Amino acid sequence: MSSSLEKNMLILRSSDGEEFIVPEVVAVMSKAIKNMVEDECASNTIPVPNVDANILAMVIEFCKKHDESEAEAASDLKTFDSEFVNRGQEALYDLITAANFRDVKELLDALCQNVAEMIKGKSVHHIRIQFLGYQLFEILTSNFIWNIWCDRDFD
Amino acid sequence: MSSVSYPVFKETCQQQLDQSGMCSPKSGQLLYNQNPEICGILQLSDEVLPHNILSRLTPRDVASIGSVCRRIRQLTKNDHVRKMVCQNAWGREVTGTLELMTKKLRWGHLARELTTLEAICWRKLTVGGAVEPSHCNFSACAAGNRLVLFGGEGINMQPMADTFVLNLDAVNPEWHQLECRIIPTRALGPYTLMPQRVLFSGGCTDVGVLLSDTYLLDLMTDKPTWKEIPTSWAPPSRLGHSLSVYGRTKILMFGGLAKSGNLRLRSGEAYTIDLEDEKPQWRQLECGAFTGIGGQNAVVPPPRLDHVAVSMPCGRIIIFGGSIAGYTLLRSFSCWILQRRNRRGGLLMFLGNHQNLLGVIAHAWLEEQGFWFLEGTPGRNGVSMNYTSCAWQANRIRIHDFKFQKDHQAIDILLVEIELALCEGLTMLK
Image (tube, rainbow over all chains, first blue to last red):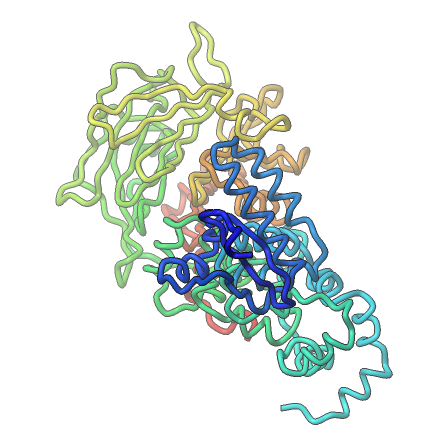
């Protein structure tokens, strides 16, 4: 596979073993990968541990768009960003972790800004419901669990 | 925003639940796995959460999220994060000033007090010296930590030209008369405050002539004197207008009763001058500058005189009250009437780029708490007068209330100092 690989292409392997062929310029938007490439540690395949195929595909999509649209209007990119980060909380969590771990600054900024907007102007109660999950919140405030936890010895 | 009370962390069983249940990373992981629908965002690492997410919020939001569970409360205690949050809300410059002025305080503490103003209290101040002979209709302002009082009328409506200074930094504050005269004498001219400098423009002479000249008093010099600032063009002569400082050396003049041909009309125009320029010049601000910032719903204050203008951090100026066309009441009474008739009459005028939090909150204070209102009452037989003004400095709000009684030759000063930095015992999230 590596022999048929074009020049300036890198293979990224996700934690669950799937491989992605990515142009080097896109891959090095991750500072972690950039360092590996610069240090010439990058062999044919770069393992990306802790990031599964699903999330890695999203990260690559984001980086590709940002790489292509450098010359494009900033407003287009903004629209793309706001649509890109508009995801479920679980995906957001995974993406933020991946972006932080692989050090992709633009992605991390866009995601965290989105989370911050979700928090802004909300009361404590709303934040709990939104981020801790409504169902769980209800269960936890019910007497049954309440008593179980309160009977325990805390610090 | 301001209708939400400032969140306070409360120790409850719920918190203990949060602590041992979801938010401590160790056992939280277990629960997270068992309940895949629980969101993981609040379980982000101790590095990502404060530096990437919390630092993008406002002080009130941080207080809210810090009350959600114990782990996040610990994360919000990070002073660096708190400082970033304060910078988001008030800008870099104001935050820098605050840091210098309140070295020993934590940012969480400061953010709370600046947001809620919970530590405010009245303090009566007794000072030495006297302003003699007694004045009324004088001008007064705060310059740094000093009060400057000048002009006005003495006994038998005699126009006065003297200047008095009260230095509140002194151990025993006393009124001192400055050995300088302001020329020509005038009554009820407006003023403005700058660190150690006083600017004075326009006003009315003893024979009722309106003026358009501009004077500067620099208190930093050994012998402070009023100096005229020569300008090739000046706004039409006026009285009852307001002057406010923004961006250190820029002055905004708004409203007043201006001369227009042979008539005197209330003015809604705004002018600026930058004292840092080599040759300072008055320039008129286009109305579009006001409407453009606020978008479609922007309001332009209707022409008015004798209103209050308060300078806020980040170049915001609040215009409140005053006498507008159609109300022909006693000048000193007009604000009170306006307030009664139209409690929402405070009009906000924003300058500068940061038009978020503080301006809105100040507006709410204006509406909900009376002490921000200018409230003057005419004396029984016209010999006493209350004069109230307020000024916002980096970490304190002041409201000066001069009570003047001609018969008793006494000046009573009530000074509210909202010293946000000096109040202990009201710590946030402790």
